[in-house]
Amino acid sequence: MGFIYRYEFKNKSNREKVDLEDYKDMIVTAIEGAFDQNLDFVDVFSDFYEFRLKESLPTTSELQSLGKKIVRADPLLDSIKKVYKKNSQLFRRKRNSYYGFLEDIGYENGMYFLKFDLVDKEDSDRIQNGTEGTQLTKVDLLNKLNTFSMILEIGEQDPIAKKIRDFSGDEIEEIASRWYLLTGKHVKRGNSLLFLDYTERQDIASNFMLYSISELEETGIGWLESFFSLNEIDYQEDTDLEDNEEDFFIGVYNVGQGLCSAICNYKSQPMLYFDFGGGERKDTVTFPEDIKYCFSQKPKIILSHLHRDHWIGANRCEEALEMEWVVPPQKEKGAQVIKLFADISKKGKLTVLKSSTGVKKTSYGNLFICTGNNSHYHNNGIGFLVETKNSERYLMPGDNRYQHIPTQFLEDLNGIVASHHGGEYFQNKTGKSCIPQNSKQGEIVYSYGKHKKFDPKYNSHGHPSYVKEYIAKNWKTALHTPKGHCVLGPTKKANKCSCGCNLEFKW
Image (cartoon, rainbow, N blue to C red; front, side, top):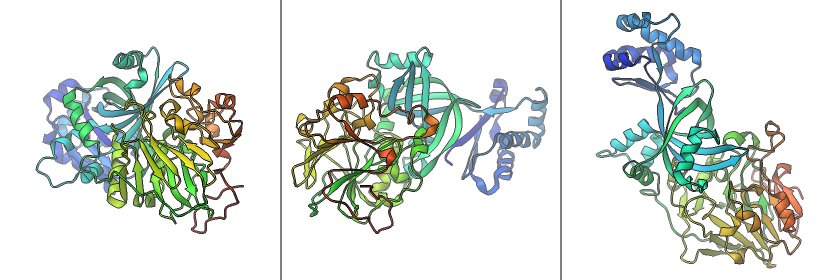
C-alpha cells in the first residue's frame, strides 16, 4: 500500500527515558501476529516503531488492538500504561513530515486549493543517505520510494494561507513547481492523504492535518531537484513523426476530468496520442471505468505538460508504457512523473522534445514549445497545430495558456480543443483576452468530467467556466466529451477499429 505507520510514546518523558529498541523482538512479534501475510515490513528505532502493509489498510480497531498487544506483552510497558486512565493510549501516531512538490494552486470563493505530490521525508532521507556504495540504480530506488498526493483546502484567513502568501507576495501562482517541507498529524478528519502512484489505483491512506509548511534551504532542495529529474534516466532529444497516412481526423476522448486525444486514421485507430490523461484524485469518479485503449498502430504519446490529468491513463493501461512518449523539456518535476518517466525509459522509449526554434514539423502539422517561464506547467508545455491536406488548421493547446502560444498558431483556425478544459487559470485572467478568434465557423471541443457528486458543478474544478468568453470569440458550435468521444475535422465517416478497443466515435 505504500503508507508507513509510525508510532511513538504519547508521553514526552517516556520518549526520553525508554529505548524502544530494547523491546524490538516483542514489538516485531506483535505486529507480525496482527497482520500476518499482509505485512510488508516492520522496523523498530529508539524512539518509534514503523510498519507497512502490502494490501488492505488496517482499521482503527486493528491499530488499537495492536497497541494493546504490545503493551500487554511486556511488564514495564504495562506498568507505564497503568498510570494512565483506563482508555488512554500509551502510543500515538507520530507526526509525519513530507517533502511536497506543489504541482498546482487554485483559488475559488475565498479558498486556496494546493495540489501536492508528496514523498515521506524519513523514507526519502534514508534513500538519500544510503545511495553511496550501493549497486542500486536510480530506477530501483524510485521503485522503493512511496508517493502520495494531497489537496490542501485552506481559507484566506488561515495562518497557513498567510505563510503561503509570504513566499511570493502578490504573485501567489509563482510558488508552484517548487519543493516544500510539510509537517502535520494524522487525524480522524482532515485533508485526505492518498497513496498514489501511476501503477496503482489511489487509496486514502489517512487524513492529515497540516501544522506547518516551509520553504527548503538550498542544502535540502538540491538532492530533491537532482533525484527527481532525468539524471540517470535514458532519453532521446528527437523523434521521427512522419507517417504515410494522408487522411486523418482528430479524436478527443471521454476520459472524465482530463485530456486524451489522438490523430486517427479512418479505421478510428490512433496514429499518435496527444495527452493520455483522465480524471484523477477527487475527479477519479468522472473517469469511465470501461475504457480500452488502442495500440494497434504503435502510436507515440505526446505529452502537452506534466500534470497528472494529462498522463494518468498509464495507470489503467500498462501497454502505454511500451510506446514512445514525447514530453516537454519542463525543468522542475515531482516524484510521480519521474517514476513514470523511469518506467517508460525501461519499457518503451522516452523523448524529451528539444528544438532550437521551438517548433517541430511533422506530417500532421507543427508541434511547438510554448514561450512562458518555468514558474508553472501551463506556461511552457507542448502545443500542437494540426494541418490537414486541405490546409485546415486545428489547435490542440493542452493546458497551455494562449498568451504563451506563438501568434502564427492562433490564426485562421478551423477548430480548437479548449485550453485547460475550458476553464480559467487561478488569478491569471490574461488567457481570457487571448482566446483566438473563430473566423471560419469552426467547432470547439471541451474536454472535462461530469459527475453528480459535484452538482451543481460538473467536477471539482468547475470546468468549463469560460464558455461565454469562447462564444464572444465566435466559438458557438461546441462538442462536450461527457456526451461521448468527439471528432474534429472529418471528411468521411470512420470505420470501427477491430482490435478490441472501445474508442468508437458517434458521427
